[in-house]
Image: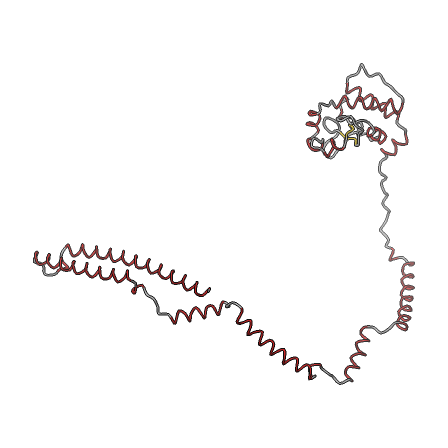
Length: 334
């Protein structure tokens, strides 16, 4: 019979015997019995038969680097060169001989048939009580016929409820007579006493008024000291910055040496161009200087140069402003 056709036997006696055997890898006393799923009647969510187990140490079962549950059954049997069929056969044969003193001749049978024969023999030899206990089906609870009856609807429950109410009422009355005041009653009596007494406040005392004046004077001194020692706030920084800016003369790029030199050079260049154009118009005998080709060309050249000069001035102006802003910032930090 093939392994997957076997029923899922449960044999606690066999498992406890197997845990006392030697580990199939190390040869030391085993700690657990592992159910082999590979090639047996087990699967995903299905536990195999107890007869398809091997004894192992915890190190080779779950904890170690080469543990069966870490690397998988196929890799485990390949790495340690274990033959699961031979192991099953030897274990079943040993259990049958040790527990029931029975030995079967299975030399003529192949491995699968030999295992099947051994399992059948073990099942025959097992006590009937253990079989019934393990394989006993779960008892199905019989549903009561008719509608469900609530306990609160019973006559006994209603009588007990009425008795409890009477008893609780008596108990409350006894406790009212013996107990001290409630918090509410205490508050009411306290408020009556307070209303009858004249209200006296600590703020009306001479000592309080003197202490108040001393505190004010002390706080004023402390504020003055803090003002002197603390750094400027953001608003005060802004005010001081604006005062410095107002007091200082507004610096312009037109006051720079570079601007003045450029202005003079431009005047000289324009004068030379005018003189040159006048001489040209006289030679050609034109009515106006603006009609000449040279004037138009020079006008275009002038416009381009002016544009380049404006760009240069703008750049210088932005650099100048940045430098001025940095200097003022340093002064303000100091």
